[in-house]
Length: 413
Image 1 (cartoon, one colour):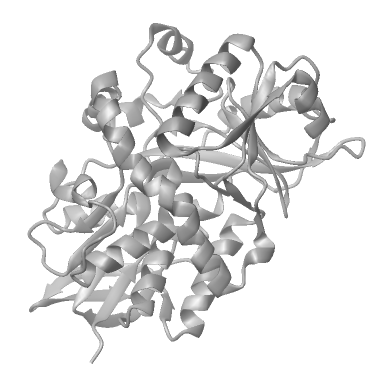
Image 2 (cartoon, one colour):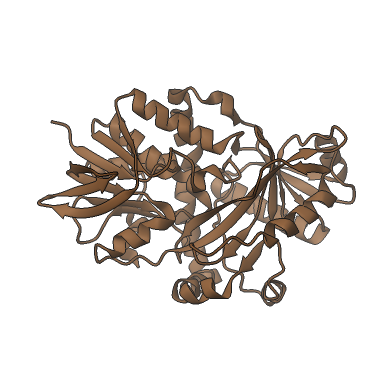
C-alpha cells in the first residue's frame, strides 16, 4: 500500500511538495484553511527568478543604516515591537550578512535558484498553465550612474559564476523598451532568464488542480492539532482526524509555532509586504515587470492591473497593517510611470517566512521521525516551490538528492 503523506499548507511550497509526492506514488492529502495560493503565494511579484543567486542581505553599511533608521524608506521599514520580538534572529541575520559568511551562503542559495525555473517548467506543462507565463524576463531600472555601474559589475560576475544572462540598456535603449517611463533614468539591466506569472495565485491554483485531477486530496479546513500517533502522525483539521505515516510542514510563517508545540525551535521571523493594483493614465502601457532598484518596489503588468509590490516591513506577523510604506512607494512610482486609479478595495498584506542565514528549511525534523519541513524561503517561496518539492520527494524516498541538502536541514541552527 502507498505511504500516506499529509502536507500542511497550500501555498506554492506545500502544493509543489504534494504534487511531487503524488507523482512518486504517495497517497497525499493537502490541508489548508484557505484555497490553494491565497496567502503569501498570492501577493508576490510573480517572478520565477533565475538571476537571484544572491539572497537579500541585512544592510551593514553606514549609509544604508542611516537612511533606514528614520523609518521612512520605501524598501525597508520596521515596527519596534517586531524588531524586539525577533531580536536574536535579526542579530544572526546581520552577522550572516558579513562578507565572509555571506560568501559561503551564496553558492548554497544559488544551488536552488539555478534549478528553480526548470522545475517550474515541468509543472507548468503538466498543469497546462502556460497561458499564465511570460518568458521575457524583467527590467531593473536605475536612477544614478553609480548604482547602475555597480550592478553591471555584479551582473558580469554572476554571469561568469552562475551563468546568469542579462542585457545592459542605456537610457536610450530603456526608453525604446519602455517609452512611457519618465525621462532621466540612467539605464536598466534586462534580466533575460526569469519567467513571470500574470496571476501568481492562479498559477498555484493550477498546480493544485492538477494535483487533485491526478488523485490527490485537498481538505480546506483550519489545522487544529498535530500529534504523534504511534510510529506515524495524526492531524485534526475541520473536525476530521487524518492519520498518516508522514507529514510535511509547509505552513510558511506559521510553521514555527506548530514546530514549537513539538518541542523544536527554528529561528523564523517575517518580512511583511503589501501590494495594490492600478490602472494607467493616457493609454500608457507597462511592457515589462519593472523593479525600481534604488527605491525598492516593483511594478508588474498583471491580469488584475499594474501590481505595485513593496519592499520589506520588519514587524510582528500578527501586527495591524501599516499602509504608509505602500503609500510612499506609490508616490515614487507615480513619478516613474503614469499610474492611474487604485483598483482594489484595500491593500493586500502578506508575510514572508525568513531565516537568519537566508536559506530555506528543507528536510527531516530532528528527533521527530516522519515529520518533514519545507518553509523559510524568504522572498523566494514562489520561485523555489517546485525545486523544493522535487528535492524533498527525493529525500523522503531515501534517494540521493541532486543537491547537497545539508545546508538546508533544520539541525544547522
